[in-house]
Length: 333
Image 1 (cartoon, rainbow, N blue to C red):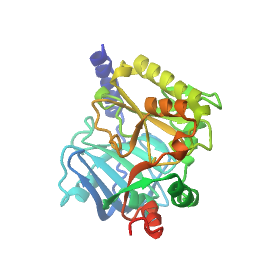
Image 2 (image 1 turned 180 degrees about the vertical axis):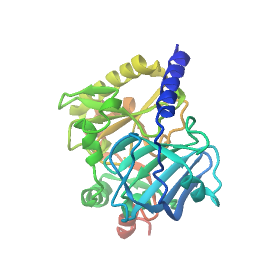
Image 3 (image 1 turned 45 degrees about the vertical axis):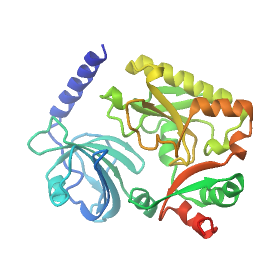
Image 4 (image 1 turned 90 degrees about the horizontal axis):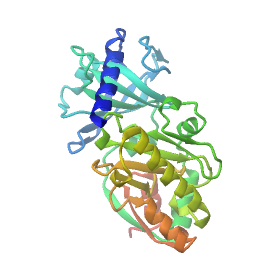
C-alpha cells in the first residue's frame, strides 16, 4: 500500500513539474565566495556566495528577483550523489529551478539539469539574505564538548541566548499559518498543549525511510529542555500521542519506527520536537545532542526540576558565538 501511494505522489509531482514550461534558475547570478562544508557521507555541499533575494512565490513559472542589482550574502545547501567542486558553479548556472517552499528567508528548490526538467538532480535549500551567523552555522569548524552545569547555563549559555538576534519569524509564520499551511501534518490550536507539525526541509515527503517532521509548540517562553518542568508533561504527552497517530495515518509509519527527540542545544530557541524514521541517519540524532522525549517525560515526572539542575553535555564549534562565550568565561583554560 505504501509503495502504491508513493508511486501516486511521485507521478502527480512529475506531472506538475513537466507541465511547468516556464522554469527559470534561481542561481543564474550566483557568485561563489567560499565552499563552507563538504559532507560525502550525507552527499551534500554548503556554499557561501552572493545572489539577488528570491521573489516570494512558489513555482509559478514567472520567477523574477527582488533587488536584482543588490547581491546579498546567501547560504546554499545542495544535496546529490556526488559533487565536482571545480565545475559546480558553472553547472548550477545552467540549471532550471522550481521553488517548492518559501518561508521568510528560507526556501527550498528542486534543481533540474537543462536536458531533463522532470527528474530533479539536486535538492537545494537557500537562505538569502544570510547573516554572518548563518554563514558560521553552516561552515566547518573544530568541535568541542561542553559539560554545562546549572551555574554555567545561568552565567554563560542563557545570557548568550538572550543576546542572540537570530530571527524566529519563520517559526511564527508556521504557527500563524502564514507559511507552509498546505504542508501541515498536525494542527492542535490549544494554547497550552497545542502544536503544529510540519515536514522538515530535509525530507522530500516521498521516501518514508527518510521521514523527518518537526512539532513546534504554540506556547511561547519555552526555549529548550532546560525550561521543561513537571507542569509541561501534558504538552509533551500530547505531542507524542498526536504526532505518532498522525504519522501513522498519513504516512503509514508506525510508532515503533519513529525516533522522537529534542535537540540540546537546539538550532533555534522555541521548543520543538523532532520525529524521524529510525532508519534515517538524521543530523543531531547522536548521544551528544538528542534527548528522547519519552526519557525527558520520565525524568520530569520523577523530578519536576530535573533539567533545571542537571549537567547537560553538548558540542559547540569554533566560531560559534556560544563557543566564544565559553572561551571568554575561561571554561577551556
